[in-house]
Image (cartoon, rainbow over all chains, first blue to last red; front, side, top):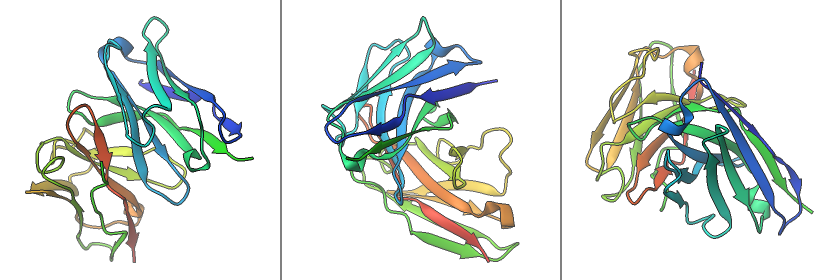
Length: 118
Length: 110
């Protein structure tokens, strides 16, 4: 069955960096586009980033553009989110999600928690 | 990229129907047929309920239905059950490889 497992979250100081990983299994990873989404405390879901199945193109939300970078390693069935210049408002539960062919997110991981605090 | 507007809360009694609206713009909901809805319980990952405005993935009860008119998408939950109490989010393609979530609606079953 499809499984997505995020890791790499933790506590980091403002201005710091963190790299999130998402291990995919149970499907042909290199055939699917992937996304990162976050849920901040007391707020709603926020779309963060997208990457093509081949890794040939990606896009980021304005709120993280220039600070976060999505990437993938299809040889290892892994998705990544490199986060720099972290701010307290980046504190959230970060999810990776699979994009089906209808631009819908049909499978999600359980999330990894990032806390930005001094 | 501003979030489509959803009512913060909605409620209904068991057996009733509730409709949650999601109002975007002509650049997102109004422009594309790629509108989805998600259900999220506290502490759990979101679950896809509706895609392509009105289609249901296998396993989603037909009590959940979606529609769209102009810049507004809607999710209707018929025959409300206690287990439907959760947060609901709309999600739309917004062009140029970007997407946007609605602000979310907390559904309470009275």
